[in-house]
Length: 363
Image 1: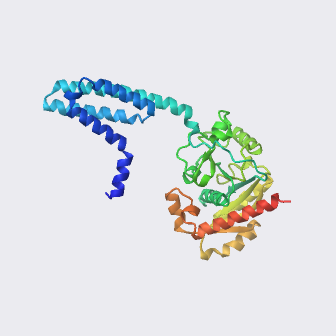
Image 2: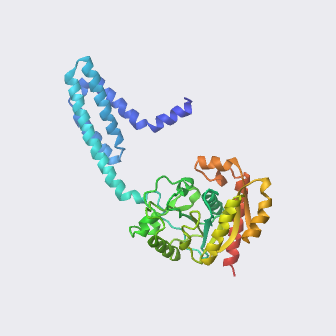
Image 3: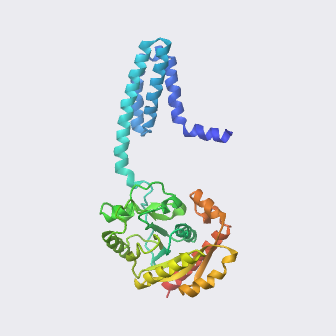
């Protein structure tokens, strides 16, 4: 191991190492500490309770004590081994007590972890942009996350909502790890929308869906539509990362605009045509198309897409290995490689959208 790795390992497991050292000293100098060891153990647990140290530490101590007892039995000191076993029981009871306290504490406070407490100030002209596609696998979620990051870099307040109830994965890209609550808790009346809003990478606010076993049932569609119509959080942009296809079309209203993502292949374009028809029936304005994963040989697709969809192609995201690398590292490529071709194109798209919003909201 390199010195830096050794230092990191020592820092990470410092508590466990201190505990192990203490137990070894107790074993080696048992005769000296015999009269006070029980008091030290109880004092130890009071310290654990006061500082809320991880319950895994005393549980690890149980294993060490039992291991020590087994070794000492082999040596032949059964009385000493019995005492160690008793102390292992002390640690086991204490560890279980701490684990129970952790469970109660986490149950009460879990919803506050990473939850946005200071919402951005109210600002006129909040824009709702749905990132949509006719089929899956076109890179819609990656574009939604990176577009949000680019808009945030331009000093906008950005909220991204993961609207894919069946296969949500926006949280991974935006830096959330197993968020405990989400939209489902708002739908079922347990929490306010602000309590399920988390802070992701680059200061973007993220609203995960939670576990919705029913998917887009009629009841869920109605509740989400009402939530979006009476949206209580203030920001400059609300980006909706939509599931592919027609599953969630019913949640749209005229206040939501759409950005259509396609890849340079016939299946994606044909499915995009169907999506366009569905959205226009709902009165949704599709203000632009993003051609994703494009190569130099795909330039001919631009005219074809604009002709067939009758929607301008406002961004062309080139195929680039940096996109996959950023996904593997769970980062935005606009942050990880700002000078890459995809990052520059996403930033151009963000500036176009910001300028468009300001013109629409201006005098």
